[in-house]
Picture 1 (tube, one colour):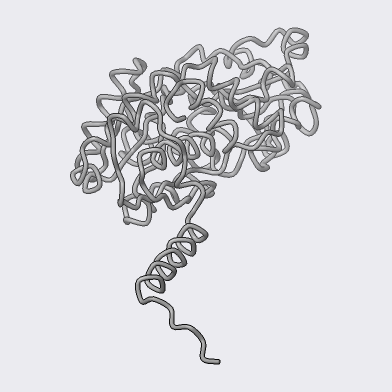
Picture 2 (cartoon, rainbow, N blue to C red):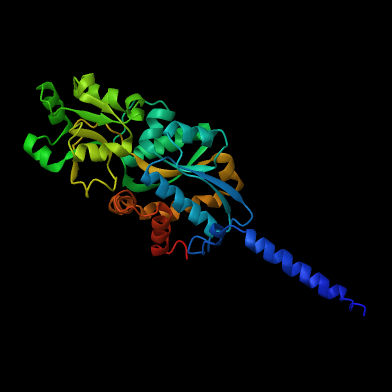
Length: 322
């Protein structure tokens, strides 16, 4: 008995349904980030953007926030978070490997723009950086209120016992020959224009090799919490481990460290294609105060939570994504 012939229309319908199912199965779930207030003003459907970031918790959080926001507007996003070293991420931006990442005003002023002058006011520094970096085809979006400046940290009880409150006090402790006048820093800090050598010169700290320990930045917090192998160490002012580990930061009484307010930096040619990208900074940056950023950092670095989950939870709280 011959098989019944199927209708061409039925076959076409089945093929269309099959193709649609296959495409749905291959889609990236991250593309389905529910829209929020940003998506009501910004539609990036069909665009592909690459977002970069440095390797520490705060940078990964900012990177993940940016990815989620872009996805909520319909963009396809390539994740390049967690790149080691400031210079590497900046080079990726200027060479076109990534389209945007969050940078700090003090870092750009000293490292990328090679400026030696000190500008203490955060807004004045931001304006100077934004203007100067236009020549490098880099656009700075709105800055955050939080200032993640470098600092020298120490366990609070030890600071009280040693009566060390300022960086000048630390310098005096080192000059006294105290065995507790020891410092941990990471490798990048030793070579930065805004790093170790300038700090030692500004405060006249005669720190010998035996009193200096170089290790990964994430290891420094536990080292100074244990006061082994160093009592003092390089930290970031908004790091989430400061409170749980009961660490204090010394007052920069001579104003060596610049402000380090964060802003999303975008290649100027990317901005020219869609100037509405400025909404990313305009809507997100004002929500990132210092207490908020330190709390978010703590959830990741001390609480062990996934940066992507923390980032998306915060954005939902703000209504920026659904």
